[in-house]
Image (tube, rainbow, N blue to C red; front, side):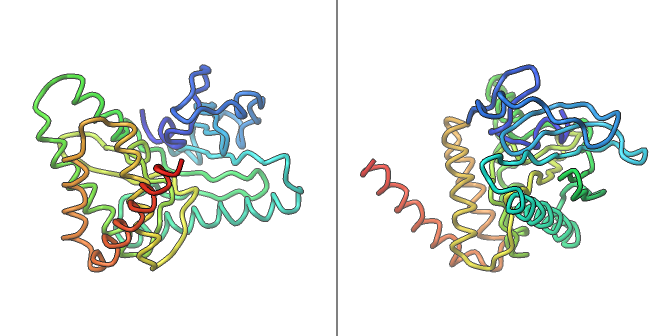
Length: 257
């Protein structure tokens, strides 16, 4: 599947017209933008970005072209797009400097509002891997180990004060061979830098909600993830406390409606 098929996560829309879980009705109405480079192939079309696959200077690459919001003033839209692309590139570079697996940033093009990234060839999303294991009815003990790997990876990311902003199992890739559980974090389009336990707690809460909605009967898996996160992160105490507070706020909102 590779990076291109996962880069938009659950909100993406495939080119064949099928949509992700969140639905992308608005994106479906927009005609696909021309590729930022000749020879690139459109693989996904979403509300936030169009994703292309091809070669960049001879290397397998994914190009994310940000879709302009027509309701915004053009000058404001340009400023916001530049800021988001710069932040995405900054977060990816910060990950890689810290030894956290993430795609290489090849080029940021402010003229076409595109960012060119390494294509993680032959990878699959953690989401698809969990689906496959559960559907097969085989031993699911490997999912427990996968959850521990995820917890370790997210702890390292948060210790670098990187907030992903859109943590889902669709935004984590498994590189082959799958038994190595070699994870790669992708899609930092909503990321930012923050040392606040509140922001890290919300990041984990978003992932927990994604688990609940996307993967039934994986409560133990998420608990294993949190346990490893707490054991790995040097700053986990206040973060887990904030996660509990965010959960409580979420439950109150659900009760109020």
